[in-house]
Image 1 (cartoon, rainbow over the protein chains, first blue to last red):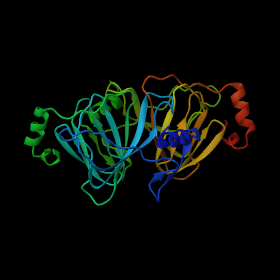
Image 2: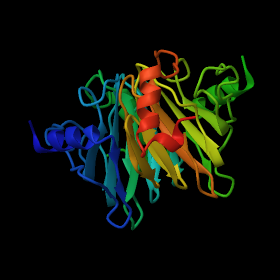
Image 3: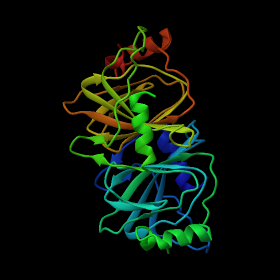
Image 4: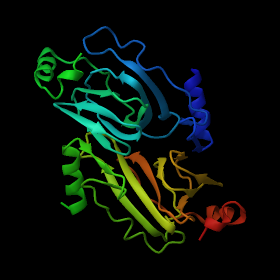
Length: 165
Length: 165
């Protein structure tokens, strides 16, 4: 078993995973790879993204997975879409989300819903880490790049254009 | 449609639900009833619990539901069990959780996993509100009271006994 998965399993078996506010880390939880193989498709580049799994089957008996993503200053996630949804709760710093035709300014405990097949990207233009919890269905499809039409539409929209690259 | 559900639907349609830190409230999200009909069974009493739905089908296309529970000072939830699991992230104040044979002290961003059929109760012995996010499968069973054996075992355990009532 990979190190991160084994650590998660052990942490969940203890039922309580204490949070270390000074380090902004959960006890025994280690990062998992964020898209080492995102591919070369347009928009799928990313920078400064760290992913932590906080609970998923088979380590919890559920149909969902909870992750924590942290984006370093000047970092951004892939610009992508998929059929599964995201329900996000910001827990650290500030950031921005491109979701469909909109860009939202985010601060702690703000919620973002990313509906099915909706292009989205998380961006941290600030000088502190930006972190959020993200719940998804455990059974889900892989992220896809945007279509030509989606790409051009977001490029033509002054609100979203800066985040289409 | 009930007022809380309609408000949730509208909030999620806007994709971004801003959080008001001064009020500790999400814009357009209103409380839903916490167990008006919990029944008279042993342990199912509760005090000072407010529940908010932050996302659930059919308002999000997912198999999970995200809720926020807030427990007032001296409040507590029902002592119960069920087959579905909880994955909890504390976001406000401090509190305690009885989970199985253990009692955990909780602070912000601590995680608690409640496995299937495990007796649990959330308690706020402090003088500030205690609040946590709780993700569950959307399709889930109803809470049940503890069996006689479970009740007596927790009563006989000095760690859990204070929370068995």
